[in-house]
Each structure stands twice: as structure tokens, then as C-alpha cells.
Length: 71
Image: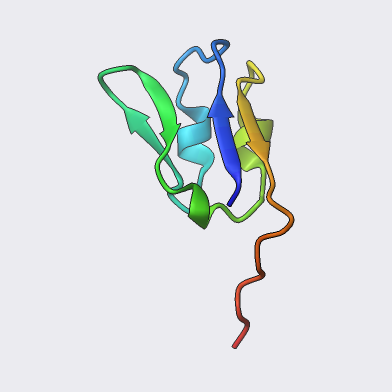
């Protein structure tokens, strides 16, 4: 499973949250910051990481995870 971390550089701009098209990243309204709700569903696109203007998102890809079955 991939690891998705958000560091203290996060300014709460929500760009990573909006960029995540597979709904892995969710928004904590109380804390005003993102969190990885479903890291097991991450598709390794790194859009969240590259979209962040503060470089506050860090995705570590698990290269040992199995590929999804193709039908």
C-alpha cells in the first residue's frame, strides 16, 4: 500500500484534495487539512504531490503491491 503524508508546509489550499480523482484524499474541516482516507486505492498518479504549491504532499509508492487484474 502506498504511503501518503502531509507535512507542516500545508496551507490548506485544498488543491491536493481537489486533484485526487479516485477520492483517496479527504478533507478534515475541523483541522483544515487533508488526510489519506483510502491509501490502498491510490493509483500512483502523483497528481496530488505535483499539484501542491507548497510541496507538502509526499507519496511513497509501494512497488511490491500487486497489479490489479485486467479483464
